[in-house]
Image (cartoon, rainbow, N blue to C red; front, side, top):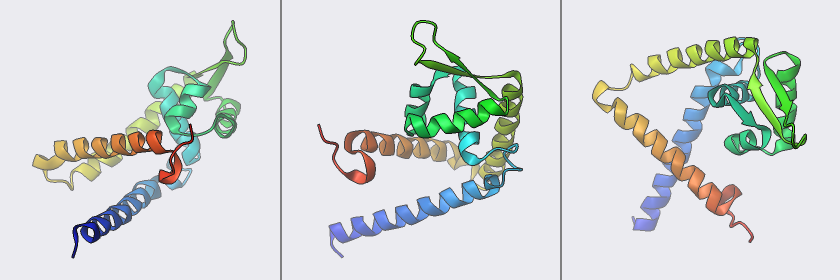
Length: 161
């Protein structure tokens, strides 16, 4: 087998394992009961706003890699159920700052605890001496994917300048 064939095989295996990992992580949280009555999109959005404390809609869209119009609908749903507040900037009313309400902070803490318990249980299946390495390698892969996406755009197509 040539080097390029081995590389293609490695990439194919990586893609398969990542799809399986995504399904295994999403499955326990796909049901809205598990994520405090929120959809996965709302759950991810709430977690990012909670982590940031305050964040603009534009910055949040960048973090989640979504366009602002799509994200705005998700945020509006969170505003309507009282978990997120939208405050227009006094100088530029088009600029909106998002933060969690009191109920949003409680929901955030609940979801954080849920995810922490889940991943604590997952890590118990990883040999203790390899846990730090797993965390480091997942971070390395996430950073590499983001860097590649920033360089090339969607699906590896080169961005037009």
